[in-house]
Image (tube, one colour):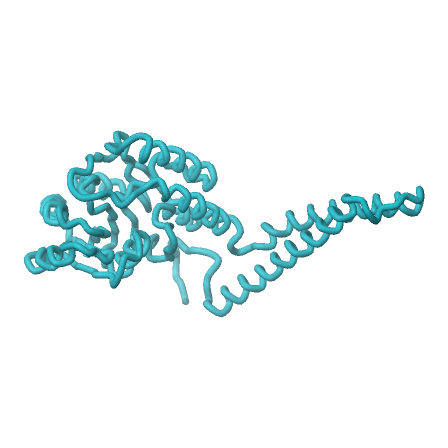
Length: 315
């Protein structure tokens, strides 16, 4: 199997047949072996029944039906787990991504590990969809150091060895390029078509912006400090504790050299609080180091990734 196309769908009964027909024609034209994995994310309409009917007429189609609506990230993860292709392509099931762009992604993936779509001429409302997306894309690029115009575009192509090493949760599917940065992957972006939604109801809303910000904090921590938590908590703890010690030292001198009463001064409470906070932060860092060590040693998780071995190997 050369290419796996993974498509999460949720209540898309008006779109699945047309999507399958268009996608099948495009994939047939590439001359590659392929499979199309539809992941039904707990649809409550006729989506699953229609997908089963599509599967009965096309052996290249695989249908995964989740027991309930777990969300887009979980649906992508399920598709990745069952995908057999050397290249894995993802896209939305609402016909806004154009299957005709897939050959462009497949051409570029020869020289890259991830090819990300860019909906440069996006056909969505500006205030409710495009503006929050522009802000989120700018923020994610700055925080992660992976500069992409459109993190939210589901139309992407991945090499199998990249995607199979990633564990997804929360709303992390949009951060795959940033998370994969840890593996030293080569990422590029290509402009793709984007169509307005003609049928069905959009599953996206402004509330997702809050989730994106929270997941971005998680991604930044994982990228920078997942194997060295003390380097995150330690500096904050040292700064807080040092300030607390300096304040306490100043008050001690004030007390014994000048005989001033320091018992009722707010500065004494601040100094004590800063020392306590410093100790707690350093303690959390040390606990984090212990957890990381236990995790990596018991799970035998590597702290490196080998791209290839040149020469004889004996392992």
